[in-house]
View 1 (cartoon, helix red, strand yellow):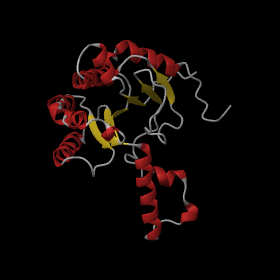
View 2 (cartoon, one colour):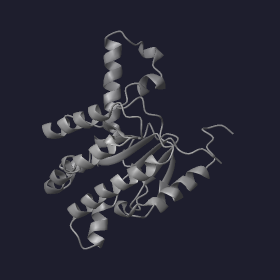
View 3 (cartoon, one colour):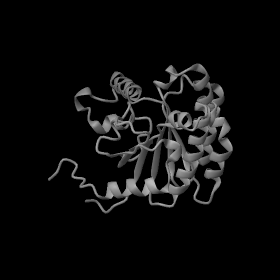
View 4 (cartoon, helix red, strand yellow):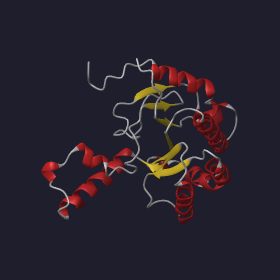
Length: 235
């Protein structure tokens, strides 16, 4: 049993659309409510000893959704810019990072990403790692390409390659491993999300849709984590 609090929590934000359907609302209304919930959760977690929060906001597979829904989701960074800026401007302001592909994002979103990261880079509060157009398989392609480049430029002997080398080429290599991974919405799968970083994560599933996520669920997830015997392969 661990008595430590998690330092890095990752959340798969699932269930916005199903929450909206159950409420008789449109899927877009569900995504708006989900973004509001995220702001509340960030505020809640800032009061704990948490160092990093990684959030799965848009996957590499989500491009397959209806074009109108994709367009709406891609407009959320702009819609909630004021909220993000407020969280970053507080005394213990959040530091914002982004993980994922950049080649398919609009110029407007690339400019917003640059703004959020640069304006918050010196903040010492909770680091929020926003996974946008993120997929672990794509991240591994990025890692392998980086390794091959290092070998071709004689910066690395392929025979000396270690897991530590590969970690250096992750999207955000400075972040610690995930301690606790939470998935909302009742599904029990990891959906191509940060599999390297979550290699030894404790995984907490809840049936609650993301817009209903609250302080009670956070406390339940923390209690679950603290009840685990984290041996990392040892006895």
